[in-house]
Length: 209
Image (cartoon, rainbow, N blue to C red; front, side):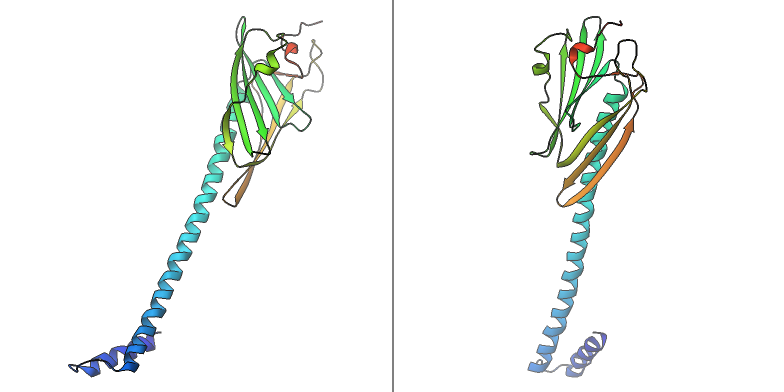
């Protein structure tokens, strides 16, 4: 490439004040410029590719961090019980007691068909309300592009006096995919207040026998 450019400079210098270039000189000039343009285009394309790749990975990482941060905050502060719905652990509800006759349910539900993790908050007054399961809503999209999600509790060795097991930790796993880039996060979250693992809401305030 350098030899061609030097040759072109010599030709231009040699021509001096002549009227113009020969056909051969013009062909050489166009060829050199074409090669330079191809090189510049290749460099720009490579830079754009790596930028988009890095940007997509950042989006995936950010989604994972945001998801784990909210789930972790909810589980750590759980003061009453955690209800795990289904054997596949794709849905769970964190229940906090906010007053003498008031509760707050924070629900997470994974929809594998839509590839979204939904979230919702519901207040209620009685855990024994037979219509309560239908009142717990997951009407907000927390994370899109979720290809896998699970929440598996690790229980205490023995039940408490009410016959229920306390949750020592909750193993949460999330996989997010966006624009062809995928990443996963797994975290073991230990609640501060040793909440109970319940299968039905009426077990939340189950009396000690």
